[in-house]
Amino acid sequence: MNASTVGHWIDGAEVPGDSGRTADVFDPATGKVARQVAMAGPAEIERAVASAAAAFPGWRDTSLSRRTRVLFAFRELLDAATDELAEIITAEHGKVVSDAQGEVARGLEVAEFACGIGHLLKGGYTENASTGVDVHSIRQPLGPVAVISPFNFPAMVPLWFVPIAIAAGNTVVLKPSEKDPSAALLLARLWQRAGLPDGVFTVLQGDKEAVDGLLDHKSIKAVSFVGSTPVAQYVHQRAGAAGKRVQALGGAKNHMVVLPDADLELTADAAVNAGFGSAGERCMAISVVVAVGAVADPLVAAIAERARGLRTGDGRRGCDMGPLVTGAHRDKVADYVAAGERAGAKLVVDGREVVPDADGSGFFLGPTLLDHVTPEMSVYTDEIFGPVLSVVRVDSYAEALDLVNANRYGNGTAIFTGDGAAARRFENEVEVGMVGVNVPIPVPVAHYSFGGWRDSLFGDTHAYGTEGVHFFTRGKVVTSRWPDGTRHGLDLGFPRND
Image (tube, rainbow, N blue to C red):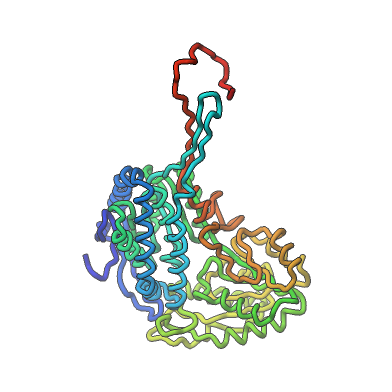
């Protein structure tokens, strides 16, 4: 295999593609093609799923203590490989190294949670539920499952799902984004070094053909997906029609409501951090600041001052913000900025004018701040997925709440205030899955679960935590009686618990 081509990971080894199709993998900071990635065709899809299916019976029947030892070993290896993995992420995604390290750290939390999965897999037992009859419950793995992850978190999102699925006794086929495919192969090598048997974790590179192949394949029992809302809807419908269990996490338009009593300095810092971190390519990024009353003017001024001071450039140079993932995506985000200005928004900071600290022609767009945005503008209605922060001005808390609850998305939101009663009321009344109080990016810790409402989630189960364990297992209840020779005779009546 050409060393410049990223292949698949099947049966414990990196293998080339047989389809004859490849795609470019860019270094977003330079704009140059860094390598190619193999695009799976029918043969590779079948081989990958067959490997996972063949490995399932043995892994399912591996003792929980042995599976847990593999998880502990993987956790240690992942921790030691944080810098190496972060460098790969920065080279292919573009986010700054410190942000990539943070991504790995948050994924590591879920691996640590999976190390203690035994507590969540245990069932219940009732002796003498009926005379001489005992009842107990167990949770069992589903079989081979698919994880389809997005470009913006090539390590963290797979780590949301894979450790829990594997710890529960499933085998996993991961389909990473073709834009940044190499992190998945490092994860595969770490799993192998941790002692995971071949076939339990597989990496299938590719595009829509690979996705559809996994959604349709009869051996895949469940699908976890993270991506845009239209694709999440598609995955949910197609996989669901094929009889699979599905959790499909979609897009977002996260609002940060700022009340007049909020700490201005803290709030401005939070808006910039949450709006421009990872160049806005986060499903939990704050993209709308809802300024209530008189706080708007000083808040916009404070955000603008901080945004203008950010250093944009190559993420390997200690910059504050890196490039967007592709040139096409950068141009799409820039078009939204132009559309917002044409619609009447005030362009306070124009990221299209940024002069990046980088070599070559990377995919850069600097921090952008739009004020006086209204709900009918495309910069408000659409998920932009870039470093564009919109400010919507409202007169009251009630108006702010109605704005958030009327939005089609319900992924994350935050309120900034010094009023505990107002914060508590917001927690109760806002119709969003994840809520922050003076916390701009309220991503739950690993022992809770991640997921939104409305068009931000398709399927009933959130990611990781207890809900993640339930997603990757299914319950079984066993009712048993051991004859002692004292009860005989026919009785055609419905059984009663006596």
